[in-house]
Length: 269
Image (cartoon, rainbow, N blue to C red; front, top):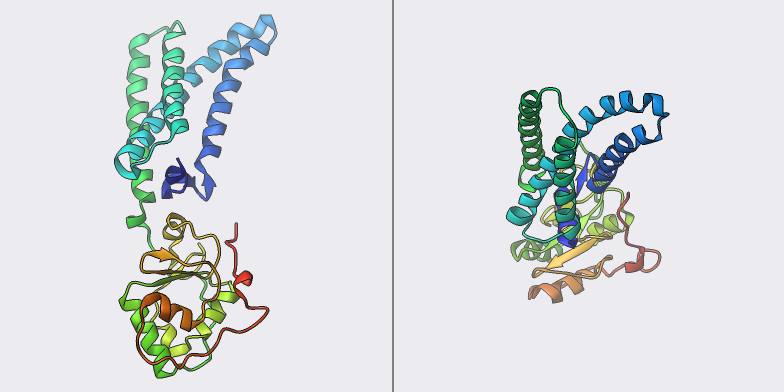
């Protein structure tokens, strides 16, 4: 379930998908209960007004929920009990809304249901495709981190190139002071050789989906040899040892307080 909740499809417009599900079920509950709370003399008229709204809403919920189940099984390849439960409930609600009312023209309602199914399916597919990490367009108008001012020596450049060549990555955010210190430890020339992933959504060339998939919780966080190191500023000597670097080691040392590992930045909400 954790993989599902941490996937790129767990949010819509920056808000949890579960919030929209809650609002949809709340709307269904309100439409179903409203006639029961109305005075007896207007209950029948209100029921005739709300029931035609229940059917398309429940049908759209059912189609979208079923598309999420397909996504969960075929793409994310993880199981989410509540996702499956939501799909079952939404289908049952649609059947109840469709079969529990005496429609004046059943054929018209069936045709209406087919149109709603088609529209909901196309919209669900479009959203799933647009949210796929491989189709995310980098934010090239985002905010840049502060410029690195210290120069690099040959050892720093060699280490940075070695880290890049061995697949090491550092996850950062443009607003994170500790991230700037980490880059300053490499210097201006060497920092350009590093594989840096911007996690802030409004950052330049941001990749928030990747950071979310990696469960990055604070910055900077290094990934060396496929393993995430403890978050915080890393001395180049530590990174050299972790990555198997064998070259010259004329590196600057990690600054003392307040730029210790404990001062690493936490993701902004």
